[in-house]
Image (cartoon, rainbow, N blue to C red; front, side):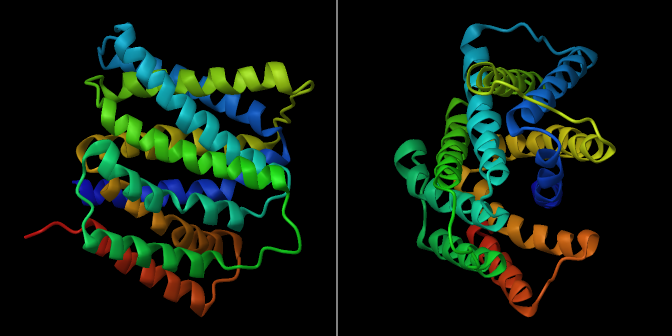
Length: 285
């Protein structure tokens, strides 16, 4: 069951990179994310009611879920969307964020008391090497400093969110927890819009509607729910190791659906990353 959900998560999360650029072509990043998580919050609210789960719970459960949402949906996604919107190449953003499993492994021991074995570190190193081969090093002559700073903040936020979500491990149903996390993301981006952006905009073109619908239904409802389940039922270090497969899987999807180049180095990188993830996540017999 865990392995099947992990595969679905990789496919759904990887597909998000294909629809990020069309979204920010027709909106500012924070307005798009605010709209996205408003719809996601409404969806999880009604699903919770339909599932007969209690939505009004104690503040000791609400506040941690909202804070996780601010880290995941606010700082992490906001940083990635913003960095790409001001010209940071998607590959560089992906490369920096792909450091997440390395950082999580380094912190999982002191924060969560997880035992990080030499085998896991070997898998992490191979996974990162494979991801780097796929993403490549063609960074251009200059990079926007704000974009680099934003994606570094994204890296720190997604690592902190993963560790925090594993540490609090509350007993809320996934739909209720995701509802409050979406509320956190919505409020974060609404705050950014209100105080930092004078003229937020969204052009509801056909392209934008298709792209944002993909990220709402397949990524936020699908992939993120699976991620929360995996974090709750797996070790943090093992869960995030699969993120090394995101860049190569995205490259393969871009090749299939967008006709982008896929060369032999990409394939080698995919194989190395796959071996690394297998080593880092396999169970002892």
